[in-house]
Image 1 (cartoon, helix red, strand yellow):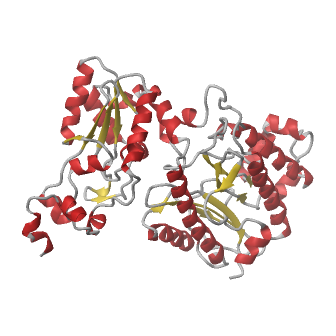
Image 2: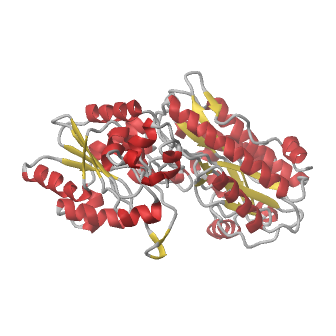
Length: 496
């Protein structure tokens, strides 16, 4: 048998496979889903240069049981660990010693039981070397390193944990109660990580383009399947299968519904009906864990009614306005507000709104129809770095969040820079409960024609979303092809 060959007795499996040019290693442990070693070394060096002193602790994730210990959810590595240490496998941690210019990789080598069930795996030493770290240790040595630093009164920087096992681990490492560790996360480290991950390298842009290519396949398939009598669940399942067939998964739980007035509607229990609109908000996470996020809204049966076209074209104009305005040096908050004016003007032209458009948007009257923000950053997370705190990702000392309804939900308001990848996702929704509430409270009667709005309570909702890269000149779509978006192009592809 191959693994009994005596020629490999004094070699690790990893070195034997490399020396023999055998690709089985790629099947046993996915090293293809990584960048060059130098990429990770440069990232860690850049992070070190942004920090003052102490140790930086980057925790990976562990597997999470679904309904019993050995039946786990699909594993997803922490994105910051992926960014700095590369490996998508449970049970790792990385440490960067700022003061002594040292780096450490922690994890446990597999034993024979692991090999029986999982096959041969590379050693922790080999994994560390793959990302340019020369010092590696068993995972339980992490406590010694952190404990020694704390005993020397050195600062230990860590990011806010979002998984409870890592909260408990941090309690064990630092002595800070698990319930309090988030409040002790290093703001200095958060800002340093955001400054690096926000501006995408070319290798990252290439990966996002690949994820968007998968998204194109998903959404054009949904359009072709959108016919009366088809179940929402069937189409949602097909989309998830497409994402999985490319080696990874969807980048978030798919939203596919003919009740698009509910912004995050994950219910897929209905049968599509002629005359309704199907809103599909879905994305792929490719093998390198970079994401796409697109939304299209299409008519069940393939033809928009005139009323649907009227609202759809307003949203499309909003979408195009955002693309026109998005460029370096412009705040995304200002883009959002200008887009809202396009929405309000279009609704005024249809008789749903009235009065001065600038005043209406300043007052937040338009938020009855668009109670969310224009978009968010995207990259290794579909809402990139949201675990680090949206106040640090989407805002800064110059641009602060609002507490106004609708505008308060804008995840990204800061000034744009080349290399940012954003979503552009305006929408128009008719939410019966919200309409009834505002009307009963007499909200914005100077700007809203409630008698006309009442007639749209059965409409549903429309959202159109693309992923855009901010370039030195402006912006561009990500992916090789744009998912059909104009009315005529949507109707044409739905003929198939």
